[in-house]
Structure formats: structure tokens, C-alpha cells
Image 1 (cartoon, rainbow, N blue to C red):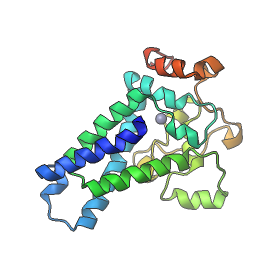
Image 2 (tube, rainbow, N blue to C red; image 1 turned 90 degrees about the vertical axis):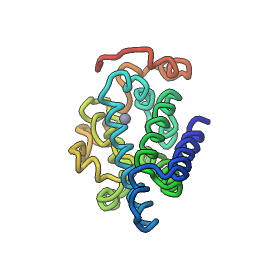
Image 3 (cartoon, protein in one colour; image 1 turned 180 degrees about the vertical axis):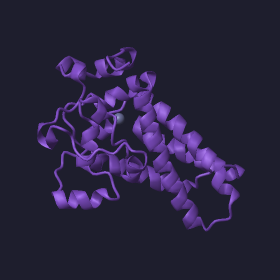
Image 4 (cartoon, rainbow, N blue to C red; image 1 turned 30 degrees about the vertical axis):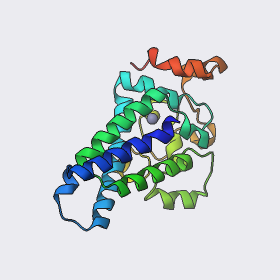
Length: 214
Ligand SMILES: [Zn+2]
């Protein structure tokens, strides 16, 4: 339910910014397709930034850690977020959309593509190496994003991108592959591997708990 409500909140912010004529992109008389494209690119960059912040600060990591607790990565991992993180995320995205003056169409396209990309890049799917390398020039692939779900800290703190792979390359957080290889790498969090740690109640209570990296 929370996942479905996020796009509505963000689209609402875009409609409001458009009606009020506020935000950076509303100040220029650019063709509408160009405004949509620029807004879409900047939104993807902003989400990359948000993801880095979730890893950078302990109080944010505690919410985001729930997403990283999954020990088996597949498309369902794309839906495993603490509702608190989704609330933080919707507030952040609404602020970005208003600051940018992102058109509602750009926001809807962005949210739809983001949801699809999340299912794709969390998928338990081994693309052919050639196809993976080719796609990775532009997009985040499952093999690329899997590195981010490693139990090894410096691997977890890499490959933050969601749709485009360019932000990780540009801001030097790109990592080609996990040290132990795609098949042998450990996924999840070392301290949350027991079945009790995977129960709904334990996951919801997780933000109350500190961990070794804070
Ligand atoms: Zn993460």
C-alpha cells in the first residue's frame, strides 16, 4: 500500500508546483519534451543521491537496512522496504519535485520506470555476459545491483544507481563485480541471517536497533 501511495504523493507535488508555477524548470521556456527529459534525468540523479545518504548516516541506514536484510535476492526484494523509509522517501521526492518544478508527466514516467527498474535489477536473473556488459553502459543490470546487496561493507556501499548506471560511474561508486563472484557472494546482513530476524515484526522493529557499522 505504501509503495502504491508514494507515486501519488510525488505526482501531487508536481501538480501543485505546476499550478503555482514554481521550481527551477518552470522558469525556462524549454520545449515540453526537453523539460520532461531533463526532469527525468535529474530525478534519477536525486534518487541516486538519496540512496547514498541512506548508507552514509546511521539513523537513515537503520531504516534502509531492512531492504538489505534479504538473504536471497529476487524481484520481491524490490518491494521489501520499511514503511518508515518509504515515508522519508516520499518527503524527499516531493521536495525535489517542487524544487525542480518537474512536470507531472515526467514524474509519472519516472515513477513507472523506477518501479519497473527495481523489479528488473533485483531479479534473480543471469543475463548473458555480453548482454549484461552492453546494457550496463546505460542501465543498472541485475549483476550490477547484486554487488550492492553483498554482506561486504565496501561492496554494499557501491552501485547505488536505480535506472541509469551513469551516476555510479560519474560519482565513483561503481564496482564491476563482487570479490567472491556472483555465485559465491554472500547476500544480506551478517547479523540478520536467522529466520527470526526475517519475521515481519523483527523487520518492522529493526530501525530501533543499532548495528556494527554505526
Ligand atoms: Zn542500499
